[in-house]
Image (cartoon, rainbow, N blue to C red; front, side, top):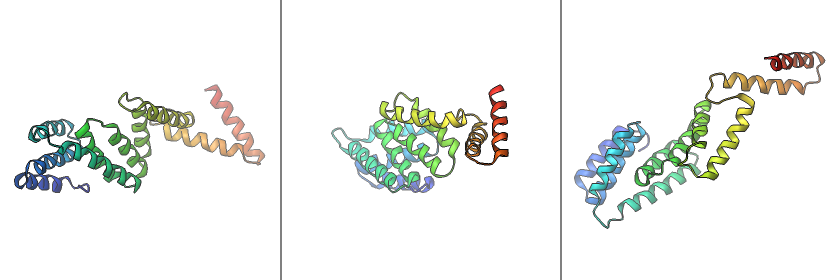
Length: 194
């Protein structure tokens, strides 16, 4: 945990060696989450499948782990610690195969870390993902549309220049300076011609 996958892998190995079947199950889950956070999706899925073989029939370990991950993911999101929240949502995704909470938290973390275009791109992708609940898809799509109306496609490398120029022009329109007003009219005339 805590963004230290090497330590998480070591902890998982120690817990798996010394623990009962529930501890082994949770250790395998920890390892799968570490792999998922490293971007090793296929290895994480393989580890997740191996994890299901460890679980004894009738065991509540998977249910308990999913509930734990969900509660911790929500708690960390309320604390605005989206980096840690992602960790728990990765575990939740491994347990339930519901991955959109991780993807949403990942996008929010990007926005919080001032990786704005990356975060917006992820949110746009989520708004088109059929696995995302329709209400969330719609809310994301509406907000992305508002943003793109000002700056164009968030995936474009010209997104920021266009957004900045649009906002600057809007601000200049509000100016009482006659020279600025004439410049704005000239720029808008050129923009319409283009």
